[in-house]
Length: 262
Ligand code: THG
Image 1 (cartoon, rainbow, N blue to C red):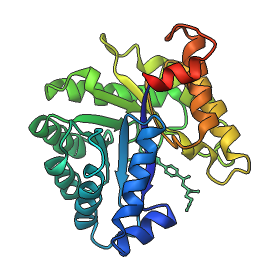
Image 2 (cartoon, protein in one colour; image 1 turned 135 degrees about the horizontal axis):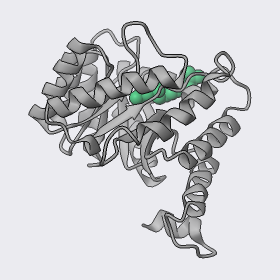
Image 3 (cartoon, rainbow, N blue to C red; image 1 turned 120 degrees about the vertical axis):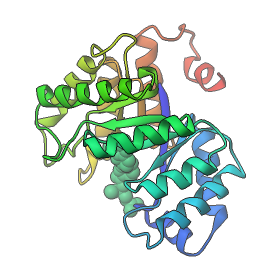
């Protein structure tokens, strides 16, 4: 599993405050702590309130890269913000994200080619997020075909079925899990699959429990990457144990420590 730490996001109050006040140490601690906890990449999102997202993206990436070289997932809807991130990223970046809109796919896949980046493809189009797995699969197939047209390797593509909050869209959990299973059949080699895990528990009371149960079920469905909170130790333990049960790691009594020392 590729774990992408979600905590450097202007959606969080402390991050928003750090961006406004240029408190580099806050961002750097978040970067270091997430990597120490097992994140193999970091999502970077200036948040919905940023007045100058391009400048804020630059500042965030410069802060982060002073303390770690892990790949960055450049999380923005704006092309100029994404390109700014791609220019600055030292390591092979992940563009987060395109959707199935023709115009957006063209521009994002061109950027991915130019900067040798990987790409997350959200399975949504102009009519929004599908409410069943059939439609998600249809949209995913469109993204895979377009990526191949642009010469992107499918191994560098991450299909995201879009997790919705369980408290308002309870029927969508099973559609997402079945989508993960079926996206893998779209090409050989299979595309990666990814979820923004914490979406599942937004507005719910027992957030951590909902997140880790969803993650285990998604891992069992073949999920290969997740944007999540790596500082949630029980969540990471559950993920490691799920991969153990799926025979991805050799059992020993101290399997949690052994995984973390990898
Ligand atoms: N897919 C992809 N990228 C994504 C998402 C996705 N990026 C953003 C998001 N979804 C994943 N990241 C988060 C980060 C935080 C939260 C949820 C998803 C979150 N934040 C608290 C909340 O809204 O309740 C903020 C609380 C606070 O202010 O402290 O839950 O799906 N490709």
